[in-house]
Length: 630
Image (tube, rainbow, N blue to C red; front, side, top):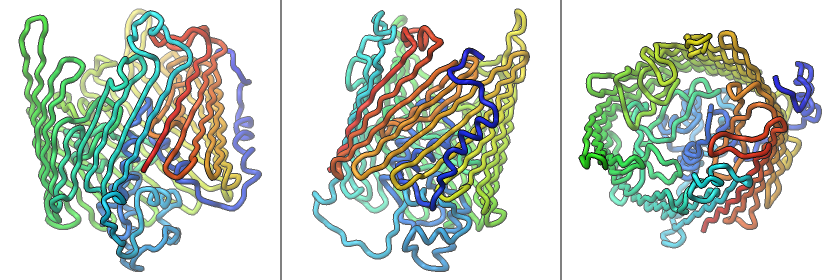
């Protein structure tokens, strides 16, 4: 390793850092919803900024379901909720009637405190009939969000004028909602380096239940179908520490799109009609991208539920691509067709789903079974087969890559909830039968993940995760490339302690080891978090120490950030990073947020590469945001 900012840590040093918080343990209490939301998002594996996932979570928060009237399938659709939890809720309702308080769920040993907090975020409890206010203005809600962020250091791309615009990022969004029947969204976004503050624009108009069961959507939207082999939105969870839930997709059908991500959305019109036994959707999209490619997509989806626990669906989709060649002054056309069938079946403790997708003569498929063997033991098994000849522009099936092709895999996971903590374990075996973008030969690999979470003392939670990946890669040996096995091991220790209702502390130690042929690398990351909560404002602070041998052994670190933004930067070589994040609420409908972050690499002469290179060893950034609702 290179010269470190801190001495090498042995196991005793790590234990001391983790144990410094436990000696002050007090009585147990719940985390705030905001803080918990950050934690459940962090459980997902990310390797880049992905604000679309945050947008998905916000959409679920905006449209919670009634936990007292929702059926089993509707409850399972909630993020991070499995068949075991959904069954426990339905059984409790059948036995006791309505749920009057979320605290009642503490009596069910299959539902953890963490799951109860998830239910509080995505559901509500309707006890009796609500008085309906027919006033137009009282049912009208408007939410606005404006964000400005900029790196203080100027990158080379701005000095040599490669980037034509300014170095700031500007984001503006307005959402209008009238009693969930009429919804309007407007968005304008400018990334760093772009000229216009509306370089990317998105908008939508949605009408719900103007005719019973009919939804109409115009403008920007997304479509989700089956398990994502043919058609899915940008909102896709990756493999994470939850071994039994992240693998299963729960399609939402047509949804409005007001995110800053400029991919996998549709632009046009769509409708959806739903009844107790069947559902029919149709959609049309026409969009021109940056590469002068005009894409038009048309399709329809039909779903049928012969009885409440079974749903069968089919999809037909046709895509036309038109490319205008400025050199030959000719138009090139490409037409593709997709057909797909999916099923979803629930019976007692069993939940199974799958999809078969057809493209030309190729058939891609995934089939997944989730079953609760005991009241506290949940198992999932999945089999996927994506041929090399299968292609889908909107596909995002579960797998090792996001391509949904050239992959064969078998996944097994289990979750065990005990009085001594929760255990998650999964093993994923995958194979690429043909060449990939990184290796011109067939290759294979596997992943093993084990995590353990327990409340050691009142107000004190301990989390441990071990992750190991074996994967065939290209290795330069002498003057030629050879296929070699790369083994990556990660260890994470985390301790969270709630000092009182206003102060929460969190410590983490993460270790990384890479063994590849004759080349070995290591990395270590340590951070300390503090969160201060008060009536009108909250303060988040973090300091991170890291050291790795190179970029290859980088470690990702998820950060608190402005609402709607997810940051997961790769930290490598030696350095310190710290940030301060403040939220202030002067009154109920107005929020101010601001963040300052600084990365310091004492052994570097510059940070970044190419046009993003910054001379010097400091990279700092500030961001501000205003959220206003009326």
